[in-house]
Image 1 (cartoon, one colour):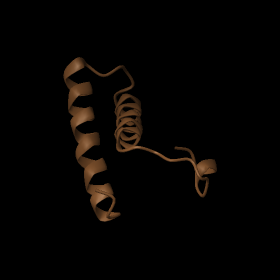
Image 2 (tube, rainbow, N blue to C red; image 1 turned 135 degrees about the vertical axis):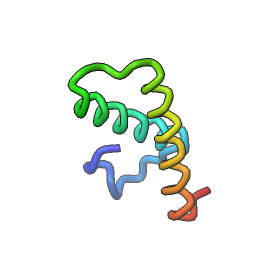
Image 3 (spheres, helix red, strand yellow; image 1 turned 45 degrees about the horizontal axis):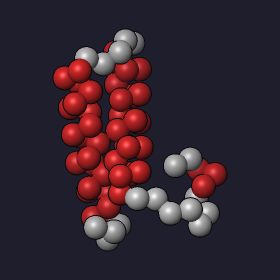
Length: 63
């Protein structure tokens, strides 16, 4: 979901939002650590991404 798609007619699913949030969080954490995430950290980032996505979707009155 890059900035160039804002205002486009492309439809995104809730799963797309979860996937994008998870990817962003994992990339940020890897950058902070300067090394790959452990399996436990990846699972935690996926859970955090889902929680954050749900909060954003609720605020936007989408879910």
